[in-house]
Length: 117
Length: 115
View (cartoon, rainbow over the protein chains, first blue to last red):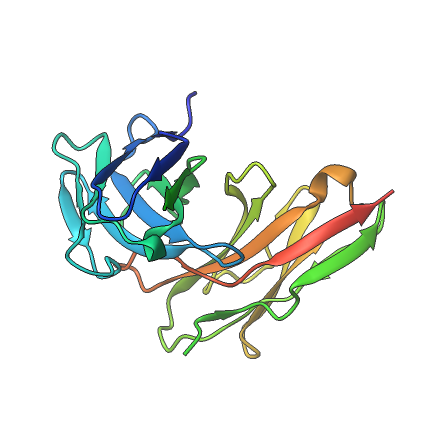
């Protein structure tokens, strides 16, 4: 079946602009995650949705970052007043959303490379 | 403090040989899961193998095996019979507890397989 998809694959914007990054999870996956990966580093957690609600947004760096998942499927990561330091690859992952102790493997999309000039 | 430490930034391995990638972790939670992902130059993270903290045996998936030493808090990945297509960045990650689903990743190890 189809994997996690992300659009756009690349986004170039100017400092101060607003951007939206979209993630379409694997069908049937109730859990969705956003991570940010800077060059040469491992991904860093941003936010996790279980269904429509943000179960954990402790990784969002500041209030310029916001994410939604209104119907429990597609999610949009929104960044206001972008800064050059926001340049990174934004990865989305989804999982079945298993119960306690379940492996609940996260499957990743190809990422959106954001460049803020 | 770093939750996941990968001390090898880059490694070279000859085709058909085995390679071991080191990973140590830090957690006080008795329940946790350890994951290894492969990230080729295309950028997509590919799940390889999982080890649960209560699993009695080391995990294996095809040419991938996990050398889990709980007392030493290490979860090294072994890739046997390396292939050219194994050239990629490899990340170790941990999920702590039974309610916290986010993954904490290490800095990664770049593996280059030589013909």
